[in-house]
Image (tube, rainbow, N blue to C red; front, side, top):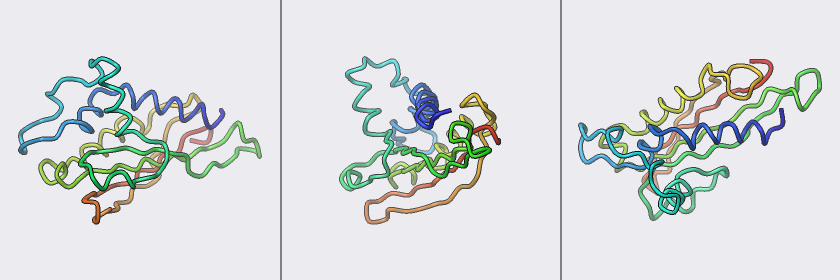
Length: 162
């Protein structure tokens, strides 16, 4: 399968997951203020939905715009691609999911862990791209402390060899 087709399937899963969007969008006021009990942004009119999603879902690992905003964000993009029998179309494709969470979200309810758990539920050991199950490869924390963000990179492998 072509890389674009793989990424498009992943994009649709993310864009259509109600719980993930609640976790990315709603800021909790206290530990028991559960964002999963809030309204789904997917029920909003498209003109209200688009700017919310567009700010929080990216395909290019750029973070310069985070300095003056407090949000949660997912950036996903292709990583290593390993051909099967020297065939690009039949390959194992790794995908990086960089999850960013402003400290004002994370300090209230450990939001970074909740978002990471939800991404894992959506992709780990699931048939996504039609050629096998997604496999969790690794996870690694990172910080953008000068911008007030913590983050976690999740790496999954998709393709014929998984």
